[in-house]
Amino acid sequence: MPERLTRQPWVAGFFIAMVCSLSPSAQAAEWKICDLQVQLRDKQNNPAELQTRVKESSTPNAAECPQEGTALSFRPETEDYQSMLPRRQWPKPGQTVRVRFRYLDGECKDRGPCRIKHYSVMR
Image (tube, rainbow, N blue to C red):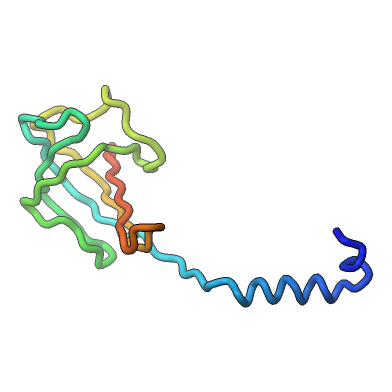
């Protein structure tokens, strides 16, 4: 740390306060969660994603959930949505599974408004 700042500690505090007051304020957003029952289509057209149809949808926190009958395509994630579900653990065609759909609306760098989505297969 420069000697000038250590001799006058108020200068460092003033500098930090100025930087904080000039930075834009950030607001934390809240994840919206939907619990879905989906049925996998018998024929999977895209091997990289599951093609499903929503059988049942519950909205615990006023989220914008897919309605019954809606077709969804997604790559399934683990329950903690931290990684992709290994292919050998994907549900089989025709099977009905529970899926937790999470999304967060916000501003994406260089793209403007965007939605981050996660689809976790629940066991």
